Image (cartoon, rainbow, N blue to C red):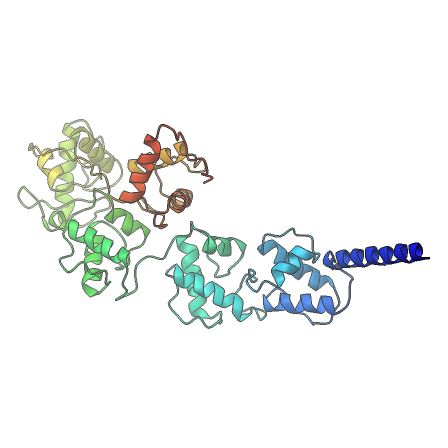
Length: 417
C-alpha cells in the first residue's frame, strides 16, 4: 500500500512540474482570446503599435501590431507572442513604433524618444513634450537631409535606425550663441585663414557667424552663416581661400581673383587676358570670349598642375603671378590634424586603407569620409577606450599607427566594421 501511495505521489509531482514548464512556454497566437491577449494589446498600445479596442481578441489588427513590434525590436517576425516577445513587451524600454506626421495613433513616449535623439544630434532644440508638431517634423526633415535619407518628415524604419546608429551625421553648427568644442575648432580654422580675430571660446556668436559668412563668400559656398558639411570640409582643407587672398585684388596691377562661373562685366577683360596667355601656351583652344567656365577652367587647372600651384581652377594671386612670368614656391599640402566626416582627400583614403588593414573590411577605400568610415573609426575608438566621436584626431591616428606597427598584431581581431 505504501508503495502505491509513493508511486501516486511521484506521478502528481511529475505532472505538477510539467504544468509549470507549460506555463513558462505559453505562446499566444492569432485566434486566441482572454486576459493574456488584453495584456498584450495594452502593452502594444503603450508603444504605439496598436490602436484598436482592448477586447482580448487576437484579431488581424493585433497580429499586425505584434509583427511590427517584433520587426522594430529585432525579434523573430512571426506574429505570435512567445516568451521572448513578451519579455521585451514587459521590459519598459522596447523600441516604440515609428512616427508619421498627422497620425492619430502616435503616442507621446515614441515622440519623446525621437525628440530626444534629435536633440542629442543637434537637430531639435524644443521641448521634449511628446507632440509630433511642426518643430519636430522640421527637425526630422533636417536630419534626413544631412543623412541622405528621403526627406518626408516621417520617422520610418530607415530614419529611426540611422538616428540610433553611431553613423548618424550630427546637425551643422547654426544655433546662435550655442557653445561646443566643435565651435572652438571652427573658430581656430577661421582664425587660421584670417577671417576670425576674436577669442577661441566655443561660443557661436555674431563675430563667428560674420567670419563664417565671409569665409563662405570667398570660397564660393552658400552664404548662410551655418557650418554644414560642405563648409566644414572646406575649413578643414588645406586649399581654402584665405582672407588675405580674398582681400587682395592682385599681386600685379589691379587684377582680380577669377573664379569658375564669374560673369561680372568688370572681369571680362581679365578673363580674356588669361585665355590669351593660355592659348599661346597651347593649353587653351577655345574662343577669346571672356567667359570663365568650361574648357578655360580646365586649362587653368592644367596650368596650375604644371607649375606646382594649388589646383583649384581659380586665378588668384599666385596663379596670376606665374601667368605673367613670375615664380612662386610650389604649394605643399599640409596634413590635417583631424580628419572628419565629410572630408574628401588623399589622407582620408590613407585612413581607410589603414582601417581595412586592421580588419574593418566594410570600409570603402574611396577617399570620402562617409558613414561606414565614421562607424569604423567609432568602433576602433570604443575598443581602445578613446573618445568615441567618429573623428580621426591625433590620439586616434596615433593608436592606428601603434596597431599597424605592432608586429604581433597584423590586424584588429575584433574589428567588424
